[in-house]
Each structure stands twice: as C-alpha cells, then as structure tokens.
Length: 92
Image (cartoon, rainbow, N blue to C red; front, top):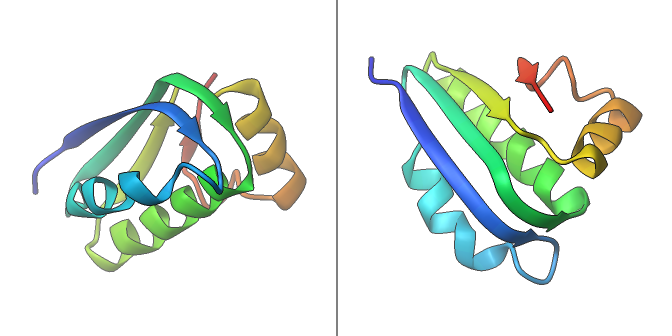
C-alpha cells in the first residue's frame, strides 16, 4: 500500500483537462492518493469530474483520495454538488 502525491498545474477545464488524464489515472494507488492543486490556475466542473473518477478508482483499489490546496472555485463546486463526502478531504 503506497501513498502517492500528484501535483497538478495549469488549467483544469473542459478544454485543457484531456492531456492530464493518462498521468492522473496512472497515479492511482491502494494507499492514499494526495492531489495537490496549489499550481492550478483555473478549474471548472471538469476538474470536479476528474476528482470523482479518482475517488472511484481509489475506492476500487482500497485506497483513499485527499485533495490539498483546492482553488476556491473547486471548493464551491464541491459544496454545490455535495461532493465533499466523495472527496474525503478537501482543503483550501
């Protein structure tokens, strides 16, 4: 059970998220996957969808998802969609 930290950067929007997907999926682990969003400059619901997918993959592997430095926009979207329960820790 290995813990992994994945730092994402730039825009995580519908138009820019596709190139990030292979790297993000490869980071899945049976331990804790920490996604650091400190360098994310822009995000929309595509970023939240990405976190939903990661949470599903992590749960399948018996791991957990932790999100650090979530931009205020993402935190607002998570609250709007009730995603705080899916993403175990959403910290700003």
